[in-house]
Length: 524
Image 1 (cartoon, rainbow, N blue to C red):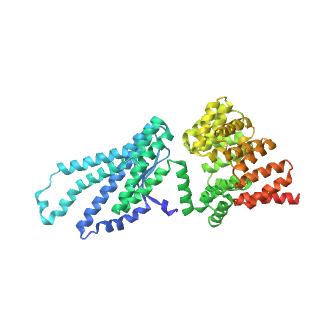
Image 2 (cartoon, rainbow, N blue to C red; image 1 turned 45 degrees about the vertical axis):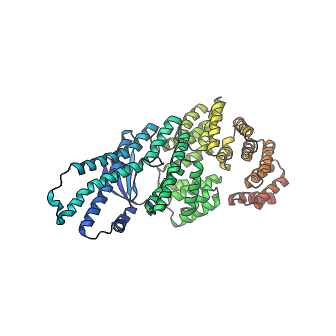
C-alpha cells in the first residue's frame, strides 16, 4: 500500500509543491497503446497534446489552490496522476461560500483555457506553405489548438457535473449547506448525483469505456462519503481487502487487530501507525498499561506526533490529572488546528471538572469540525443538560441517533466513565429514547450501564434483563449483567451469564473477559 502513495516533487508554484504520482509511469505505455504512433511526426504531435493536457490539468488545480490560499487556507501540495489532479489542503474551508468558490475556480480556469485555445486557433494565421505535403505535420500541430480547446471544454463540462466529489458536486453541496445545513446538503447531493452516476456507469458499460468506468468508481467512493452508513461499509470493504487489522478494529474485534499489529511491529518496530493503532485497540480493551507503552515509544520516535500526544492526554484524563491532560490537548490543537478530537476531549475534561460552560465552548468547536461524529453531539448534550437547556440537549441527542444509534446508546467499557456522576443526564436521555423507541434494546443496555457505573446495580439489572429479552444473542449483555450480579454477590447467576457469553459467538476479547471472571470464581 505504501508504494501507491509514492509521489515525486517536480516543482513549486506560488508556494505550492507540485508532485507526480507514481502511476504517471504508466502514461507513456498508455499513450502508445491509445495512439500507436507510426512516424516521428506522430510522436511529436501526441507528445505536444499530452503536455498541453498536463498543463491544462495543472492550471485547473492551481485555480483551486490559489483560491484556497486567498481564503488563508494552506495548500499542502498538488498531485497529478493519469486521471487528473488532486489539490490537498491542510484543512477544509470553514464557510460554505468559500468551499463554493474553491470548487468553482477549477472549472473556471478550464473554461478560460478552452476560450483561449479556441481564440488562438481562430485568429492565428497559417502560412500557405504549411499545406504542402512535407509540412502537413505543422498544420496538424496548429490544429492541436482546437483539440486542446475541445479538451478543456470537456474538462469543464465533466467537472461541473453535480456528482460529489467533482467540482460541480462540491459547488452543489456548498450551496445546499449554506441554505439548508450540512446534513440536508448531503441528502441533496446524493439524490441529485446518484442518478447521474448510474447513467454514466450504464453509458460506460454500453460503450465499453473502461477509463470512464474507473472514473465512475472513484465518484461512487466520493458519494459514499456523504452517508455515514455507506462510508462505514465502504471502509469495511477496503480494510478487509487491503488492511485486515483495520477491518478487525472497525468490527471491534480488538484482540484480532492487536495480533496483526503485533506481527507488523515484530517485522517493522519503527512503524508508528501500527503502534498507534495497537495503542488504540489496547485502550478500547481497558488495557491502559500496554496502551501507554506504545504511546511512549511513538513519542520517543516522534515527539510531535499529534495522535500520540492526544492519546497521552486522554490517559492523564483517565487518571483525573485534568490540567496535564488539557495541556496536551492544547499542544495538539497547535499541531493540528482543524482536528476536532482535542476539542472533544477538552470538553469532556471540563465536564468532569464541573464546568459545563467551558465544556460547551470546546464541544461547539468539536462538532463544527466533525459534524458526522456521533460522540461529539452526545457529549455536548451533557453540557447543555447541565446548563439547564434540555431542549438543546435533546436536539443533540436526536442528531446522535440519526448518525449512529449504536454509538449514541452503547459505549465500550473504557468509556463507561462518561456516565459517572452524570446519572441525572443519563436517565433523562435514555428515558427520552425509550419513550420514542420502547423496543430499543441498546437503550436498555445504555441505561443499565449508566446505573451500574453509578452504583445502582439492582436497577441496572432490570434494564439488562429487558435488553436480554429483546436481544438474547448479544454476548455483551450477558457480560455486563454478569458483572452486575457478581458485584451484588449473586455468584451463581453471574456464572450462568459468563458461561452464556462462551456459548454465543462472542468476539475474542469478550470471551476472554468471561473466562477471566469464571476463573476468578473458581479460585475464589
